[in-house]
Length: 149
Image 1 (tube, rainbow, N blue to C red):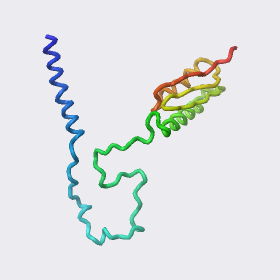
Image 2: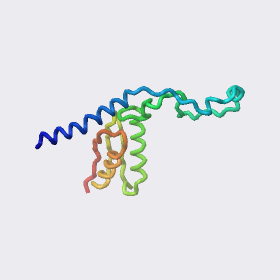
Image 3: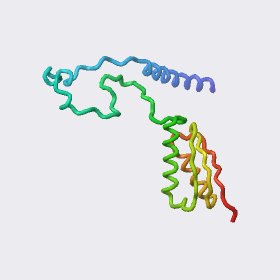
């Protein structure tokens, strides 16, 4: 009985994997002729000053659909670390429950280090939670201290 269930599961998974692999390796079809490609020559030769500039983050019009552009901030990248640090600090500073806490955040290769002094365990947990929720964070090292009372 277990062998038949295994065979059925195998027969359900293999076609799906093959379909995904085929879709990933398929070439892009030639672009269809649309109305914009059939503009008169006078419209195409318009001066550059009259045509608006494309946005800075726009893809080229001849880019294939399956182009995988790298994300701006990947975990462990310099931009990702800076963005994560800024977002964590902004969240901690905006939280009224973190009043009186002095927290420093440093992110290096996706690892966030929290240092400083907090008033109680709840503030340490809040700061750690903000760090854990941030995209691009792989690990949080919580070295926050609570003063003796």
